[in-house]
Image (cartoon, rainbow, N blue to C red; front, side, top):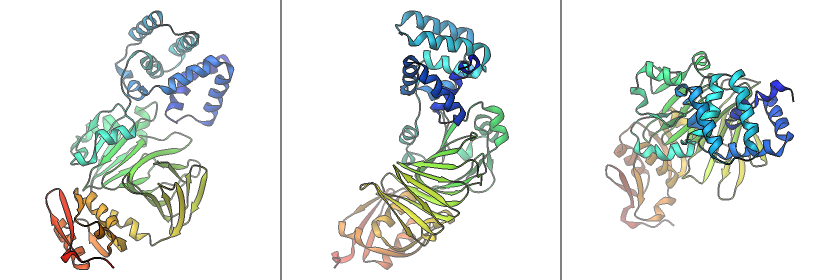
Length: 403
């Protein structure tokens, strides 16, 4: 490797950790890894740490001279074998030639103990059940609660996002976030029950996020791909870019597109992950299995069997939620009530398990009061509902058994 290439390694390591490294950078990193076992061990140790995310976001508060003093102290106090001289040399070169942000990030990574917030942790700690309005989780773990009430200037300063007029919408401005970020910073938008939120990503992709769901994304995308992570359900209208695929990861499934419209439902409590294509073309990948969808087709991943199937569907049944309606075509009552429970933020209980096997056909307005919604189901079935503020108990009328 050329001497100048060694100076790039700390930068590339950081990008690799955040899956933002280009193919040429990955090639250079692999070359460096192949040079010695020490390099491989160093990279392995960095990758095993789970507290990097928050650290690199504190770079603005770090003074380089103090940081170097602390790292020198650490190096003199703790027995780090052969790895440290290489790491130390790299950092010394980087201190001179790389951006202060890189130095602060790598140094801070070594000497301070903090915590990284993964998508799963953020969803767990900011449980949609406990939230009243959408919450934006920044990469350092801080939260902007009641997102639409946050001061517009504050939101733009912290994230590069703008609040759009209309229904619960924010938009990321590509120019703003590129000017303020050396690396793509990850944000996570968490939408509680009984809410829907819209977001326009920095590439122009429009996403409508359903209740009890979350989306993790970089505030701007790198030059290789556009990667987001979904928990729950969302409708995507992906901006076209033939050179940069848009990839959604959700519970073991990868969905890759270049520009299209589709819906993904991937709630943890459901037995399936369902991808429904409205327009364009998408590639769905689970492990080594891949399939391509055409408009009107749906891919279903059966979690328990870890198998995937494809079929033609009426797409409106799976996308009407974003337009304020639920359309059901002879759907299993248990599935119907899961959607109602998420939307109205109530727990569903059954007095008789047989009631789950009823089916319902009809259209429900999401913004009706829950008692009106359940009354429509009651008219179409042999069921009755006892409603409290937080629960719904489903009973069969006169204990009539299903034949």
